[in-house]
Amino acid sequence: MRVYGYARVSTQEQAEEFDALNQQIARLKAAGAMEVLIDIESGRSDSRKQFNNLLKLAQQNQVDEIIITRVDRLGRSVITIHKAMEILVKHNVNLRVLDAPVDANSPFGWFSINQMSGLAEFESRLLSQRIKQGNEYFRQQLKFCVPPFGYAKDENHRLTPNKNIHEKSGKTYFELAKIIIDLILKMRSLKDVCNYIYTEYEVVFSVSGLRDWVKNMALQGHTAYFVKPKKGINREPIINFNTHEAIITPATLSAIQGKLSANRKYRSSATSNRGQYPLASLIKCVHCGGNMYRNFSRHKTRTEYMRCINYNKPGKYHCHNSKCTRLREIITKTITALCENAPQLIEHLENNSAQTTVINTKEIEKLTNELSVLRSLRSSNPDIIQAIAKIEATIDTLSTPSKIFDRDGFENIKRKIAIASQATFWQSLDEEELQLALAEFVEKVEVDSSGAINPTFKLPLTLSSIHP
Image (cartoon, rainbow, N blue to C red; front, side, top):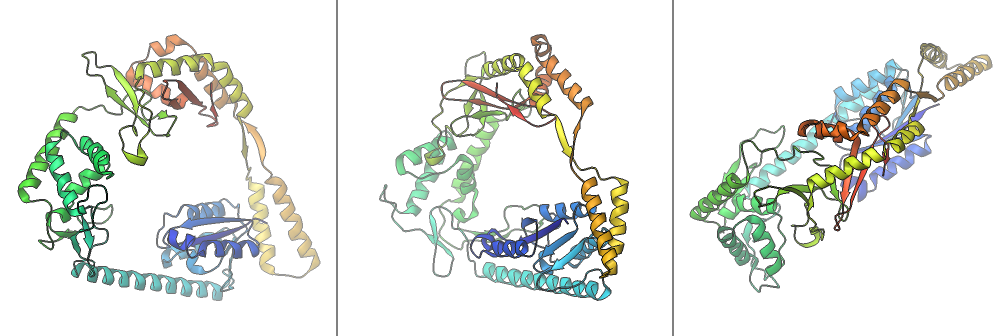
């Protein structure tokens, strides 16, 4: 008998601090769950991965019983729970609720579950309303959640200049924020500013973080809400002007915007092909695991080379791998390794091409229907109990995983590898074709600080990896 448990909490905090998730899992396993599927997501969401996997298993007749602690673990929407119950009943899956034992197949049980689901949604809507009212009051009081660099919160949670002393510079954080604004106007780029303030003051900013900080309306003396657009939420920004002392004046803001716009225009192009090159996003740094980005030499030849994206980052994010390796050298060595190791790839493919599957035949479906009829009798007759056990054993036998071999798929991949082992094949490809071909065979290419290049290949049929 295939018994699954389903546990859910809404937030990571509930899972870690309050141990609610572990409590559910322990109860479900004690109740007989062979496997427990877990979601950490709101019950009002219909995109819960494990919840949808559970329903999919039920539709594939791979579940006999599902155990939950409470009905609201399935969801906090009447419609969601109702649809789930329809699937379970249709596929003869028994639902066991530990805190409210009901028979979902009976009219009274169906009524009880729908009542409990309505109560769960009612509680969810009440909580949502309280949160909205609390947030609305929070905004009316001009309160702030996380103050930006240079500011702190007073006793009323409103923004105020941070007068605490920065240990290394001896200045207040508010004064230091003004110095950073001056540096942005004076220095060539935001990256130069980030490196300077880390070296001089040990203040860590990424380039994107510094850009967002400068654009924060709090630095202009305003308390604003809903400024950044969020997916699925269309709400007008709420801006309260001149609520605290500003760091940036309107003239300074205009100058910064002009400089950022000029830098963007200098560094970007309407016909940019950034990311469109062979092995794009597949070249990794051995030391930090980060991606390596493409750059061009200043020489008129415009030679392409790869460098660790974390090399220019300050502080704990910094990677010592300063090696600049030519992109063409990485591509050439990767193709050479693929050509040399083609026989090993084919051998590896042969050893791993068997796949496991469960054969769900019409006979299994027929027996499953007969089994549900016999179970619904709830009889104590020994002959019926013996018949149920016999049908269950037959279904288990028919459902035993068996090895199958995809001969057509194997021959197709083998042919591709054989073609890829010929240097003339790679020489015949243009840049776009080369990018697509390498992406099919290469999982990643690791480069270390000495310039050593180590490609890892993937097999499309089995997704297995092999190092040359």
